[in-house]
Length: 449
Image 1 (cartoon, one colour):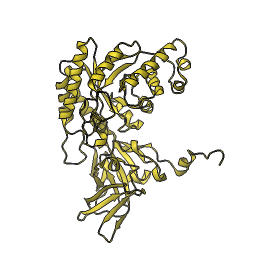
Image 2 (tube, one colour):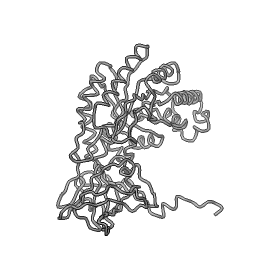
Image 3 (cartoon, one colour):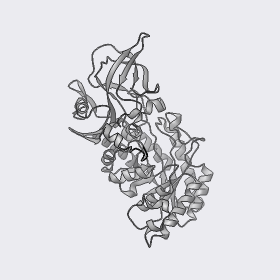
Image 4 (cartoon, rainbow, N blue to C red):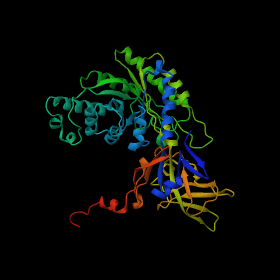
């Protein structure tokens, strides 16, 4: 369910007309519904809580890579949601939004030493280790920080770690999980499959078991569990259940070897319906499946949804620049939103429904949906049947709350897309569109020019 409905002939977000937002903020603009964000989190929370015996006091950690706007994060944080982060910047955003450090997971295949140091000093809940090389570096960083704990950690740390360290605090031994590549890939596109044999994430099972033992032998890190994430936009629970089964078997093996395993990070990836008639597994079915896989292990689960919470909570509001009708019969609907505002169609061949804000009467006709960027790839779809559109009409790309604004750029020197959050009959600009002067002011001329 979302909160985008027609009222008085025009599409609204909750109780705010999209025409009002377009007039005040301009287009293109991302618009998010607070009510939808809250509802999606609460539905998943309730589904997970139904299985406390198997899943423990499970953490739901929103994946910031899906949508990292601080106001969006704060909306979820006030409900108790944690954060799944993949960079120092995302950790800082989560903290700024009110997510406690002990509800932040730090993942990612290429963490720098400085980022590892920041995570340790911040006291994040868990660092997910993705390779033997990373484990060695984390141990070295943790050792360096602890050696300086009785003095000033930022002074004794390597120079590469000094600039980004948070305020001095006691240096605790970081909890870690080993990320497993279960050789089970799934997802809506090859570029968002992360658990297959050739994917860069995690390590094979046997290597993960060895890394766990190596970590357990070090006084500078504390292995607490395993993690996996096999892909995104997964619409079949079978591959997820198979991956969770791998984690179960590994947990039993590690315990037989004398190791403690108290957490299993199950990742995210559950798909959402981008097409109105598409069917996807419900959060209830997803949680029940996870509970079956973990039954009897007495572990605390973590879930890392991104798209599941945010995708259908946002739209990209755009305006028709013009309609180009060529002599060869093709009809181009030229929008002021472009591939640099919404990358998913160009990057993943992704589908987003285009809905008029104030529909016109008339028969549907096929349009090629394109933006103004100087790339043939700036095409959202071809030959899509749509109702009549005229220059100046407003439209929205639906299900655009995830992997939309976070991937936007200023390509072609187009101002970065604005973002708006709606709450009932109130709305607020949560990321303003920069002016051209502001964009140019960020680039001082070289001193010799």
